[in-house]
Each structure stands twice: as structure tokens, then as C-alpha cells.
Image (cartoon, rainbow, N blue to C red; front, side, top):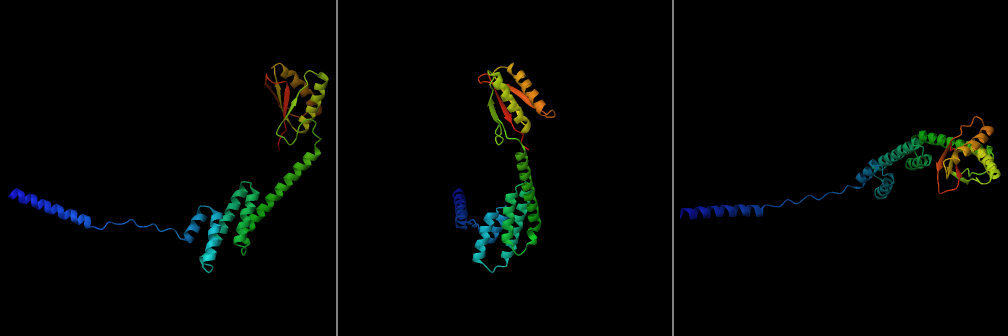
Length: 237
């Protein structure tokens, strides 16, 4: 009887434990509370998503036009655009800097001093760009007309008249003029290695005659499947 009573007692205790576990309340996970509009706006500004921040600010202005926080975030967003303008201007992108500055001004039109320094820097950069373009235009106008090359192209390929000595000499005269006037690098592409030295010599003499101080850069490539030709590469300032 004692073993039976012991087993019965253990079974009863085990049943009570199971009952207590099943009756204990299960803790439900807490629902995540989404950030409100102001927190989302702050996150967008912090992560430099300024276009998104502008849209969020406009929504909040429509929803709560009298909220005191509007001016704070409006100024914060304007300062973020101003900082972006300064950064892209330092990288040389004047147009992007002007665009960001315009957004800063639109957000804080009552604070012109906020954008004054960057505006002056952009104006100076645009003036420098204009002066550079004008100088390049004057330099281009001062150069004689190109004879064989396309000055706007990165390079020009000219097939050489190696079987017509008179025609070749005239070609080399024109090539030499373009090389000097447009500061060209010269690459001879020839089917045989022995073709290169005499072509370089003929061109070098003509360039030396036109401008003895010109530093002529010549090299050659062996292209066995092609007829002799020359590649002229104008110098880009």
C-alpha cells in the first residue's frame, strides 16, 4: 500500500504543477509604436533625405499649422540644405550648390543672412567658370583653322598616303600644322616596325621648322592588319 500511496501522491503533485502552468497568463509581445510625424521628419533630416523631409514638413504644416515646432524644423531643414550647398560647392558642382541654396532660401526667406556667405561663394565660382569659358573661347578663336583633325573630338585618325610620296609630304605638312596648333600627341599605326622611324623623322622635321620649342610626343604601334595611319590626340587644357 505504501508504494501505491507514494505514486498517487506524486501524480497528484505533478497534476497540480501542470494546472498551475496552464493557468498562468501568457505574456503577449508589446506592439511596436510607429514614430509620429515629427520623429519621422527628424529622422529624414538626420539621414540627409532632405526632399523627403520637405514633403513631411509640408504635411505637418497642413495638419498642425499653429504648432510651435514648425519653425524649429523649418530652420533645421534650411540649415541642412545650406550645409549640402557648401559641401557640393567644395567639390566643384556649382549647379547643385545653387539648387541646394535655393531650397534653403525658400525655407527661410526671412533670414537672408543665413545664406549670404554661400551665395557669395557660388557667385564667385560662377564668375570663375565664365572667365574660364571665355578664355577657352578666345584661345580657340586665336588658333588657325584645323587642317585635318576635328578639334572637338578626343582624337582623329588619318590614313597615310604611303604609296604617293608627294601626297604624303602634303599630308605631313598639314599634320605638323595641326600638331603644333592643337598641341597633339602623335601615334603612328603601321603594318611593319621599320615603317615607323622614317615617318617620325619626316614629321619631326616639319614640327621643328614650325616651332622649334615644341615638345613633340611621338610613338608607334604595329597593326599588321591595317594600312599605315596616324592618330592625332589634341591636348585638353
